[in-house]
Structure formats: structure tokens, C-alpha cells
Length: 58
Image (cartoon, rainbow, N blue to C red; front, side):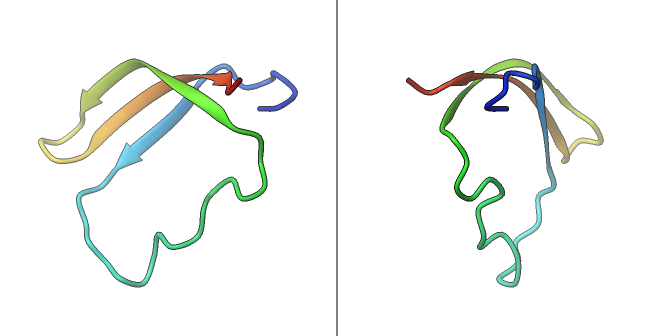
């Protein structure tokens, strides 16, 4: 993303709570980015798909 080669970030949310995952940041040590929501939808009544456009945090 820092090189400007990523134009969309897709995040899919599954409604599950667990204490064994989700503790480590996905982009540890990476540059900061703002995410502008450009599209969203519900896939099966529970799972959400979110699509963002990243812009450098400045």
C-alpha cells in the first residue's frame, strides 16, 4: 500500500467471538492509512463485506 499499488481493501466480517484470535495487528509496522468506505453488502444475513479505498494518513 505504501507504494500506491493497492486501490481497494476488502474486509469480510464474520460475527464470531473468540478469545484465541484477533490479538495481533494485521499490518504491524506498516504506514498509517485512512480507509474510505466505497461499497458494502450483507452476504448471508450475518456476514458483512466492506470495501475501502486506502489513502495515506497524513
